[in-house]
Length: 263
Image (cartoon, rainbow, N blue to C red; front, side, top):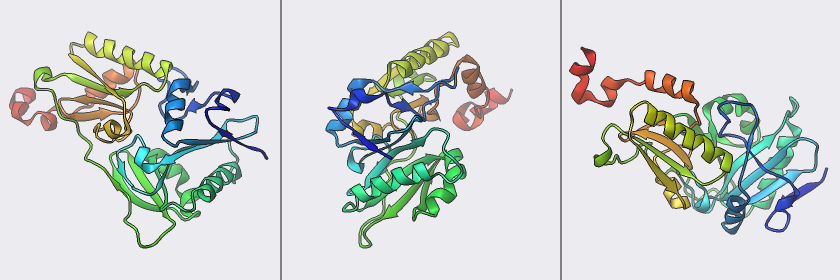
């Protein structure tokens, strides 16, 4: 099976789906902006696709340039390993992972962050290939495979929070990177929905890996916050936002108002 390395010269050989920021209204996957990918290639990102009729690719980058809340100098960070409708043996995913490990064998090792639902599904796949369950933040698990013994282990870079804007008390802050026109459309829709619910909304664009690392969101490139409280890293429609706001423990978020809230 042929492996295709996407770079600035071959990027037009196909689109790349965004496999984790889900469309809130459809199972259809978003695609990344071409300019976003070109900028990430400049940072050392590598995308390897399998020449199959299915979407099958792995995307990795030097961990110093990962747009995630991690500290892992000298490691390689895996952004995505995705195979559309892989069989139970997951041999296509295994081939992609082995290729990435071989290409980065001189690094300190490999790091990947998985949403907990994906970790629960793929736990055995990674553990059987030498990855260790290493650390957790809300909603995510970090897995590490070290290639060298006498090196520091990776860590999450910061707690999941965000400094609140004192001028936007009881407001919403949406932090985002300009990854996709489709994603940006739904982010704008979320802004309008929050505003219609009576919230003041502050938009904050993330434009460097350092900004993403310090954004306060476990996802890095997208997060929604209320007064410094992280709410979600998922794109939501109106129903999803109403469910999210309705599920909040306001006594915990605003203890100074707990008696007023309780009444």
